[in-house]
Length: 375
Ligand SMILES: O=C(O)CCC(=O)C(=O)O
Image (cartoon, rainbow, N blue to C red; front, side, top):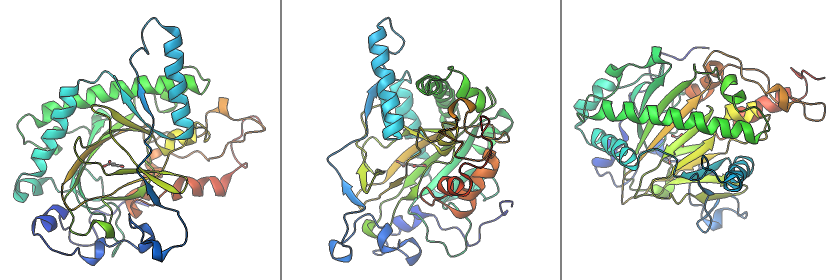
């Protein structure tokens, strides 16, 4: 099954819709009632999906991880372990990436999205590779769409990195993005070691399972324009990330990310200059579900646009990913069949964001029957 070369319908830029100041959103952005961010209490008798604003995802200060204080290092590792097992989402402070670089990276993208449409259109993407300026995920004709535009580009493997596919403006865009990508690849490499150790594995096991140095890394920049009817739509529908690990740089002014926790949606309150880390489906698979990828979505609002940078750290796309053999035992059989990331990501590329349905479906079809090296 290959991705089609073109979109099933003409692409409409959400930003153009927003700037045209339409008082109501077109039908194709209106979500079914149960998916809308605010559910009228008269339409449901359950508290499922109620937003929770009094809680936040864990915030972990990494300062001290590489110092002399062993107790502090153990405490931080414990916090990361708990966050990966219980939340699938956490924020990190003192992660080593320069705050000015983070701010500039966000700002170059804001400037890019504010360029006139005709300067952005040459970068318009297709569903074949998704690279470039886009306005929908998935290729189903007549699908209900999200209230956002985005830009998608590759850092790794180097064979896919192509500066000509990155915006030429603003003038420092490519330089800033290059630097940003290098720093984040480095940070993800360090986090992979910590995750591996926390699973009781040698520190390189997860990275090696991803293909060693031949991993994939890409960036999706999300632009959520102001929306006249934010209660009826979503900036990004609920999904878990198909890849390995995501480092999200959220907007510094406007909240919007919500993380599913049991029957509630937690609105993330970003800490200044923190990255939001989340576990993707490939690490859920490799860890044999000890770590969980968690559903999240984005709400929009009528007063302010929002920009976020999602950096995806993925396995090499053509090697089979399956539960690490050290994490499989008679009483804990392998929960997932081997699958390459190329095969895996076709689902979201064709169908768009669909909660956790993909990783869950693999599990229900195959549990206990395959590749259990110790059975
Ligand atoms: O915009 C956000 O806060 C989240 C973006 C996201 O989940 C994604 O790009 O996959």
